[in-house]
Structures are given as C-alpha cells and as structure tokens.
Length: 210
Ligand SMILES: Cc1cc2nc3c(=O)[nH]c(=O)nc-3n(C[C@H](O)[C@H](O)[C@H](O)COP(=O)(O)O)c2cc1C
Image 1 (cartoon, rainbow, N blue to C red):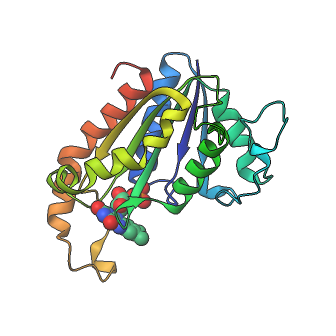
Image 2 (cartoon, rainbow, N blue to C red):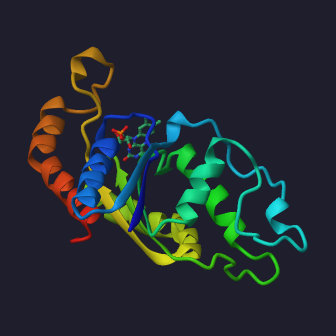
C-alpha cells in the first residue's frame, strides 16, 4: 500500500508533525511504502485558474498543469492508496498551505461539464487537526465547519476521516513569550496527560488499526 504523509504545519517538529511522524511509524510497521513530506518546505501556490485541466480534448484531465513544487506531490497523491495529512487550525480553518493543496488537488478532479468526478482512482484520507481550542469548542464551533471544509476530498473517492487534537501545547517555555492568555501549567499538564494518547491514535491510524 502506498501512503503519502503530508505535514501542512509550518512547524516541522511540533504537534501536527509529531502526530504525523507517529502515523508514519505505524504505516511502516505494516509494510506500507511511505513518503513523508513537509508542505512548507515546498514553493507553491494555490490554484492559478489557468484552466488547463479543463481544456477540451485533453487525454487526462485529472492532473494539475501548473508547474511548481506541488505538481509532483499531487501526482503522487493521485497514485497513492492513502493520504494521511494534518494541519493546525489558523483562524478557525486549516492553514493557507493546506487550502492551496485542496485547491490544486481537487479542482482537476472536478468536471466542469456536469460536476462529476473525473478522478478514477481511490485515495482514503485521514486528517489530523491540531488546535488551541478545547474539544468542547471543537464540537460546538469547528466540527461542522471542518466537515464542510474537507468535503471536497470526496472527489478522491475514498473515505475521509477527521481526528481533532485539541488544547495543544504551543511553546516549550511560555515565560519567553507574551502569551499570558494561556496557562502554562494547564497546557503542560494537558499535554502530558492527553498527547500520548493522540500519538498512539496516530500510530494506529498509520497502521490501519484505527
Ligand atoms: C496564526 C495562528 C492562528 C491560530 N488560530 C487558531 C484558531 O483559530 N483556533 C485554535 O483553536 N487555534 C489556533 N491557533 C493555534 C494552533 O492551531 C495550535 O497551536 C496548533 O496545535 C499548532 O500546530 P503545530 O504545533 O503543529 O504548529 C493558531 C495559531 C497560529 C500560529
């Protein structure tokens, strides 16, 4: 099984990345062919509306003709069995990089003749969302919003699962930042108590046993 793991957090070793690295270990433990990519290492933009994927008569419309660092990543996702990705929540949505990925990945799969799906493969998608918000706030304010936000992923023809990881630790030492709106004591206690279970969940997702 081919699994692509894509970190849509700009931070390469924090909450989102740590979860995705566990998912990678899980996927490797069951013999998957795994590729791990830090999205923010790449130079790319969102959809440029060049509409090349909608040109009449093209042989394979399900490709992004705009050439930048994302092009090959998109091709590899369409050829994979599984995409495991993750993003922090920024201002109530996933990151700008994640949005750009969705635009570039899904627009070529969407027919502008009849809104059907032109992608003929199947890619299951697991999305880890990390955030400051509590689980209660996620359920009340973000859950429905994220389901709608991620709905275009149905054009990959597989299942989409969302795993929220809430009330994350933002920095190692709060005394070095103007962040008095947060309690370091609470954040650290919560991190020690809850984050290991999230890492285990991520491993199991990677291993396909969750
Ligand atoms: C620009 C910015 C905006 C943020 N906006 C939100 C938000 O709207 N809701 C929320 O719950 N957390 C918000 N956060 C917090 C992050 O989602 C949270 O700390 C996340 O776990 C960071 O992921 P990382 O550790 O992988 O970088 C924001 C953080 C940043 C830097």
